[in-house]
Image (cartoon, rainbow, N blue to C red; front, top):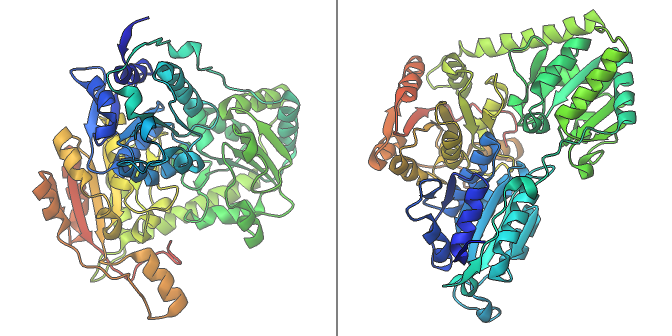
Length: 553
């Protein structure tokens, strides 16, 4: 076994897993690890301007590349700053390895400089949170961290390294290939339950297929489409997973959920069997109570995480397994039984709802007035969006319109904030662009969220990462003002803002800045920003502060 410093063993473990980038802010408690990046061409440390940004970059990189993302921070305040980003990664099921230094073990419980008990801090928002007890165990525990992050329903792992274990410590580093410690297994589901699911679908008059993030993670979009085509089943995507299916497919009606297309709720209210693939059915009880799902509908749920089956609503068939593998099993069972296309009137009903949605969105391209509507901004964006364009939504009212107003043809081209926290889009777009360097990557922000992490524009400029940030500026915290208006009339507190010119701010950072106050200019400006190479762009669009989604949140 090669002998190396403890810090270099951490970096070798990252390289062994194919990690190309580590995002973070260098700090005194992990300098021995940071030194391991020096002079290497097979992995790069990217210095960010805030640890939250580092965690978001790692999360987006992981989601779009399908490989682990890595973020790093110094102990105490640096690790604490990772929390919001790791919370997002946890809710998005993104496999992120979060690494921090820590105060030396000899100073534990003495309130030493930057001492913080990290492990319980991260335990609720990770799959695993641990501290290395001995330097000799670094290779073993790094293997364990990657194994946990990438197994089943993926997610972040936090691991810290006490300073006094790392400083000038040499170890025998047993670096093993991932194939010997990480099982590459796609569980195919219980055959009995697969046949029961096939029977329900075959006999259904109004079946509906709902695809979630598990379809994307398993690479199962084609199997979902094949099943839908076999039985003429209408398709929808679950909330925030709009790219799980090719939206141009004739059987795809639209995105489901809180900010999705209302036409999909009309469809699901008529469904007698719902095949929920790779989705937790989050908020499903609310849909049943509101009438968007019939109480007597049969629910088939396919999930890789056992605890999610039946968690949000009772299911008739719950299948534990990989989405793609289980769909293949159901397809085989249906074909063996000679299953045929279902009720043609149900397909026509779905097609009519799809057309209704298209007409509704097309009408928004004709919205005009003295102030620009955010809905009109999305109508113009659709004109220049390409199949490989990656869109990253921030939280907030203007971004909330985006869930129902953009289409996706390819998987891993849509990211949205699973926790609803502001400031998400800019750093996530940087990680996304590194994962998809040839694709246009557009972050969509309101003015409130933009200034949460605008400093990461400097990261993008310094590293030559050509993201595009579209800022709809209404000079308010729109979601909160909309809710205050709904509940308290004209009384609002803390929702009104003043802002600098964001296009000028981008130029100060060294990026490209555009200001669009005429909507007919927007498509040309977006195309110009798409043509930029090696430099990020900011497009500011002043929009109507009164135009917000109902009950925006």
